[in-house]
Image 1: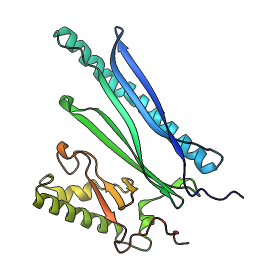
Image 2 (image 1 turned 60 degrees about the vertical axis):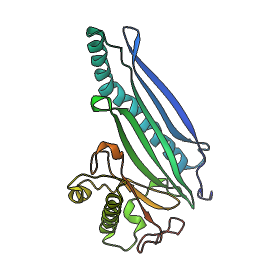
Image 3 (image 1 turned 120 degrees about the horizontal axis):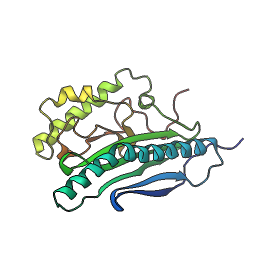
Image 4 (image 1 turned 180 degrees about the horizontal axis):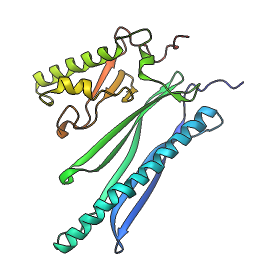
Length: 231
């Protein structure tokens, strides 16, 4: 029997697509996602298939949703004798933890949003390399029933501190929004703690981007990622 992976070596796989109208580029899309350097294990093969699917979904989204908008903007600019626009969409990733049999990262997209402002999205993934499956957030709070309350209370404290210091601004009713828009899939591991985040616009204006809160590993109830999960 092969020993389970302690780390997952990967390399970026970059692919690009371009769509044109009347021979002129109106939309370009760049996708950079991780590809396991070795696929001998079932976990590595499963992870490779997962990000291959994410890549295909990204390009399908660009063609189905962004391309019609890009074509409409192109023809509107042509009729008004304005400079011809070219929309751009990007999908990338950042590995944040890769040790102790756990592999964690986030993927992020950037595209043109309302009035040309950038629209950002993020997705977190944390994988158990021995099983080859994502780990639910609650598994890092073994035996803790109020793990969600712990995260919400921590985020509320951080928001209060940031607003008092004048370093960030949130919506007026951010406390209700914290609960309403919490998603247990929106997390990843870092060296400093467990990071969980909210979608752009959910709890703060667009200037704040994607709000991220990092719960330190010393917090009571939070399992260290290098520790073995309970049986």
